[in-house]
Length: 319
Ligand code: TXA
Ligand code: MG
Image (cartoon, rainbow, N blue to C red; front, side, top):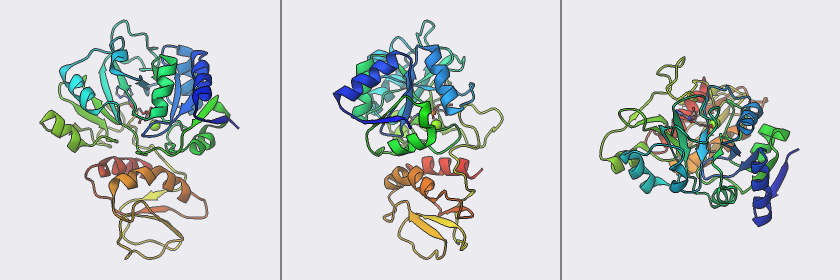
């Protein structure tokens, strides 16, 4: 089993030393746990792809502690400055043109001319990034295509000994990944709905923001990571369930208890709160993902605010 350590000055120092040696450290962020490696070290990046079983055409997000650390990595634009000042640190990733002499390994950005960057707000992530002083590449700390981890135990279950150290910082506050926004295109475009909502972005920018549809072009996704099937439990997933069979596990939402039946049931948010539902999504899917059930049936979820990100993940889980 991998080493799990509670977070304090000593474990952060140990994690930073491991990262400097090119080792992999899983750490908490406000969205999901990340599998971190030194973004400037090609061997560490190769180890991340290997540990996740991730296709090498799917680029990684580079994490830093503060905006100043991005000057060497990417080309800023006015829109990027505005979004950065309003929403960082936080659950937003910006895809920007990569600086010619950026020290980030080409493997981390899968040979693209752009780089995805993010400044997480989680205080433990901030401590780690400051302690290393390095740009840290960190995909979600799960096997490729599977459910993202929102607790240190999920990371241990999913990656086992493939990670050198897991910093255990409790449950992720938001529970769903960052919103990925392409600013290297003529118009800002959401490539992956996430913790920052489209409504928030449109308010800040004062205009409509487009979203790339989940199934728009499954063979040539504009964000290489937006493969149609992803975030998949082992069981089949059935969406918008208004009836439940006796063999199915039911994932409910809201106070409506009119849907009866099911061999097990959990509720993403009895109050119908989308933030609470996002925080519970991956852990409840894991909990219901047991071979004794035939399927996970999921109640309809409103498509506004964080609901858009929840429905995006559910759609991919159901393919
Ligand atoms: O919340 C998060 O974003 C978490 C935490 C750990 O920060 N990280 C995360 O990373 O979700 P990952 O690797 O699971 O997802 C990264 C997404 C993928 O869909 C990938 O294709 C996309 O970002 N991406 C990365 N670099 C890109 C680029 N240059 N252009 C377009 N999409 C990119
Ligand atoms: Mg992921």
